[in-house]
Image: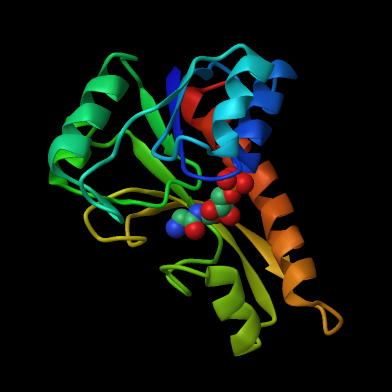
Length: 190
Ligand code: GAR
């Protein structure tokens, strides 16, 4: 199962996926390409470390969505990898019908809350400020409904009275680093 990872940030989840692959815990899944919409994103530095091609693809002209020329460039770049699965690991752009249609049924996203609670941005902060006792992370299929596609799997994280936003954030990230590689391995069939 050929996997392409899209990300905008530091890439700790992409790193967890690649570490799982190195350790033989990714089943039949194999990461073939990392793509970022941010030229200086930490996720791109994982390429040389793990021997995977990593590339910036220009997302212009829009800032928060992938549409128009940028969308066409992303479709071409991802298509060239002949992916079976496209993993959004901290890819901070809204996908539109062009990209979703090009890879229909093949795109999954990681979100740092127990969806449908706390969609959108700053989900860990939203959950912390609301005072929930349990939060976590979700892997879901990507549809036009942002953060609203069918849920594939979730992991719970308990919020302890002593937790700060920082400690809760660390716990949610740790849960993500376990959940996402496990889901990918399962989708590939071991
Ligand atoms: C992760 O916490 C992921 O759940 C979140 O971005 C972070 C990426 O971290 N994604 C979203 O909020 C998507 N709406 P990483 O770059 O270290 O993997």
